[in-house]
Amino acid sequence: MKFFKTVDEKLADIGFVKLEENRGHAQYGRKSMEYNYTQIVFIGHKKSGEYILQSYDANLTDQKKIGNTCVGLTAYELKLFSKKMNQMELNNRL
Image (cartoon, rainbow, N blue to C red):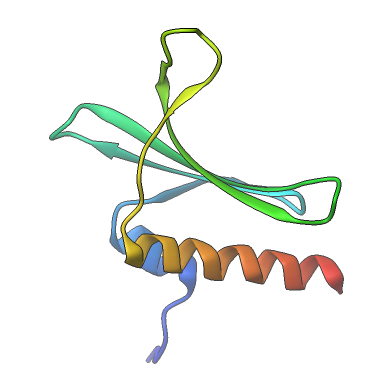
């Protein structure tokens, strides 16, 4: 019997599938049938040592063709991804 779910399990409960994870980054995806887009959430390690969190629609770019269109996160989603980012940072320090 399991008492606590991992962050990945909680993310899976709300529809995010882990696409890739390694020491430097993690990537999750979720398909929205209602609005017909795929949301990608990327956690990456910068050269400065800091981690960044980006949420975007991989299929859309802005009108100037500079980058992808931002997709917002709810407070709960942001909390889970922040926990994941902190876990990655701790694991990379060891």
